[in-house]
Each structure stands twice: as C-alpha cells, then as structure tokens.
Length: 226
Image 1: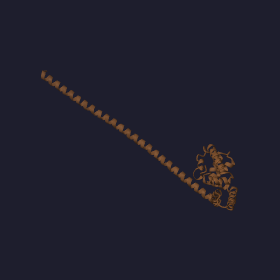
Image 2: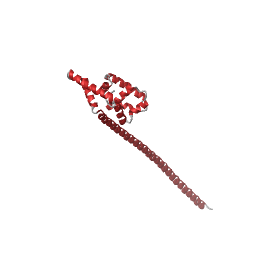
Image 3: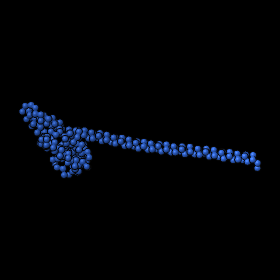
Image 4: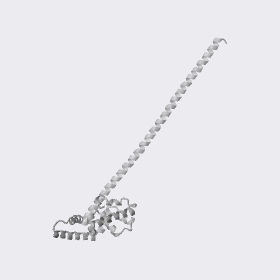
C-alpha cells in the first residue's frame, strides 16, 4: 500500500469518526432538550395539580362558610320567629294585662298627678299584679317552653337544685318582663331585682351553660334586664 492510499484511508477514518462524534453530540443535545422539557413539564404539572388542589380546598372552605352562614341565618330567623310567637301567646294569655301593667308601673314610679289619682293607680296596679302573680306563672312557663324549645324544662334538668324563687325570676325574664314589672310581681325593689338577676346569671353560667350554651341569651336583646 502506497502513501496515497494510506492518506485516503486515514482521511476516511477521520471523517467517519467526525461524523460519529457529530451524531453523538446531536443525540446528546436532543436528550438534554428532552429531559429539560420533561422536567419543565413535570414541574408545570405539579404546580397545576397543587393549584387545583388549593382551589378545591378553598372552594370547600367557602362552601362550608356559606353553609354555616346559612345555618346561622336560619337559626336567627327561627329565634326571631320563636320570640314573636311567644310575645303573641303571652299577649293572648294575659289578655292585655302585660301591656297594661308595664304602662301602669311606669306611671306608678313617675307618680304624676294628685294623691287621689296616684292612689287609684296604685290600687289598680296592685289588683293587676296580684292577678298575674296568682294565676299566670304556670301559663307563662308553658308558653316559654312552647316557644323556646322546652328551655325551662331543660334548665330544670340541667340544674335541678335551682331555687323556686330563682326559677320564678327566670320565667319572668324569659317572658321579657321589665325590671320594674318583675320588682312589683316579686314585691322587691328594682335594685334587689338587678342583684338577683346578676346572681341568677352567674348560677346559670356555672350549672346550665355547659348543657345549654345559649341560655345566657335570655339576658340580652329584648329581655334586657342586666
């Protein structure tokens, strides 16, 4: 083999090796692009799945909040309906005496007019008060239980040691009677009623609230006495 043939063979081998190297680099570059693209795809897929899961969790939270708000609204509407029904029944039960007593008590405490007029008012108030004190407590208790889902029955069950005087005060509070009206029904001063009310509230919080969480609501809103 002469030198020219040797050079040709070497050149061919060199070109072959260069071609193989070029193909190797091209294949490596494509693999790099492929794996880089795969990694980017997997990261994007992970982000998308994470965002979808987060959105799903947020949607569940929103639905739970909406359901809770709806439940609270229904409870509020039901509570307002119960109070309205109780007021209607009490007015029907007492045949107008509740309004009359509140009005007369206010007049009595303000004590306007002549001594003769004041005496007439006092006598009339006493007659009405005695009538309510003597006849109406059991009916008031029944109306409260009917309109407040057996609240007084639940209190007796949760706190059987409640004193009769405290229970009577609780019935009047549940009926929404004013402090002045309660003071006349119980023949005690308004200041004593406020003190008794505070003690009753503390006892209910200690003995009854764990079983009836909403029990202290009777001291708020329409039954504002404390």
